[in-house]
Amino acid sequence: MSKKYNISFTAHPDIELGWERKPLEAHLELPERIDENTGLIIFVDGWGGFADSEYQSNGNW
Image (tube, rainbow, N blue to C red; front, side, top):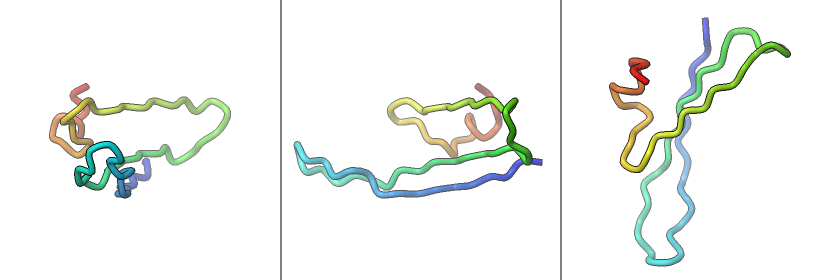
């Protein structure tokens, strides 16, 4: 079984235009056991993508 974490953090201020930025969200899922054979896969959503969308949460990638 894996462990899941949801993290929300403040985005860097928009120093060019001063626009307000929404908090950024990250969703992590780690295997129960990590050793020298454990690989790493990183998914980064494109502009307008949401890490907690139905598309991402159902593994439809």
